Image (cartoon, rainbow, N blue to C red; front, side):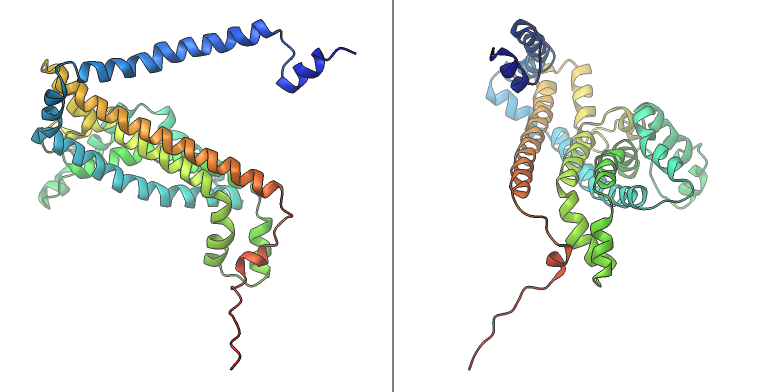
Length: 306
């Protein structure tokens, strides 16, 4: 009996080898043309005039202000989306209620709405001529063309990432372990902390990583609500646009390279998290099923004999 079908079955496909190699080659060519080559061009252009010009572009006060504003925006938007994502995923996956389909649709809304339209929505609501504009002006509250507007726009475009990562995961896991923990006397917080959170931690990490990456790289919605005030409301993507329009290509690509580095760091963190997740899943597959009561039981204290 020929061993060729066995080898093909182990490889997961029955196509000839030349088909597999052709598909792999096409994928590699596309990745090189549309991912590797543009990234290499960014770093090459950023260093075209040497390291001194590169560091000078990053040390410039407006660049530092843009970097600081980008980090502040992400530091505010990601934790808020973390809370919303966990709450929305818990409600959608664990409960049945009227309006559940509508809530799921709302979670997906930022995926279908253009970021520019999202920014215009906030201008319509909070702008000087908007619905709340006169009241905000009377109380000297600035949202549009200020940091609060940038944060709100960033939250809008990034809030589906964590929820969408957790919803299918929670639905697949079901709620049997939570119910068992409650029957054993656990409170709601204990159930979440000791049963639910360990089961969703990797999905939560993936969602936070993706949310953070999008928050730092968002351009469209932030561009509409920021006003492009240099040193005050320009994030890193907006600062890159301003420099490029002023024909400061080295400085523009220097800031762009920093954004690319942040994206690469995010990719590395995600890859490490996936690797650890795979190791944990393999280790768990070799162990007998765990009783939920074991997670809730306090550790036995040593007995001292006097």
